[in-house]
Length: 247
Image 1 (tube, rainbow, N blue to C red):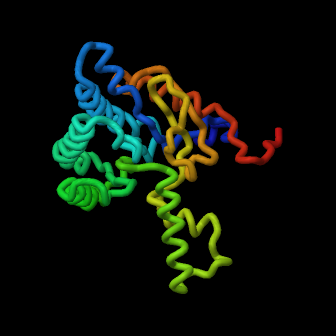
Image 2: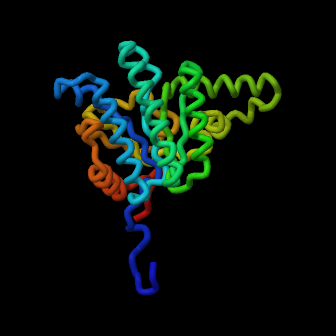
């Protein structure tokens, strides 16, 4: 603030530096128009591009999107294969742009079930964009929060068994360091599109103190303008983290 600015910093809107999004409604968007579900998923991928571009101007430094859950394997083979093809195409088409625009792309989730070629593509774009500092984009693919925690606890148990960690050292920090999101800040705000009000196994550990916003908008119709409005509302929320704000 300038010398003549008497604005109380405590009254300024709080930035949502880490926003996480459950991108829901692609299939319904397509079927409501009489189109195959994969058309909706392709449109949803295009929407990701627009939202990523909007984030830095909104003060968002970390964006995490839920692309494919551990439960999504229950969908038809056609839809699953189509989704994997869309992921691969997104990586191929976006690598140059993301790198040029300073976006660092990372993936979370269990990669072991994914096609080896897709795994190599994921690792390649992670390496290529590692220097990006304008926005940190994290894509959750074959991700499930309970699965993530179980994998982290197996890592803790192995470290204790092999003497790298003492049992009394196992606390929140030890678990967090073994999650897929190690090194990332917890989300400030989680948005779910399509009118559903479930969290669907998305970041259960990390979202302990996140604010939530549920919007009826289907993901392919979710605009940067709506994101801006949600972020503005978040800025006026009072976040006490279990404490009491003195007023």
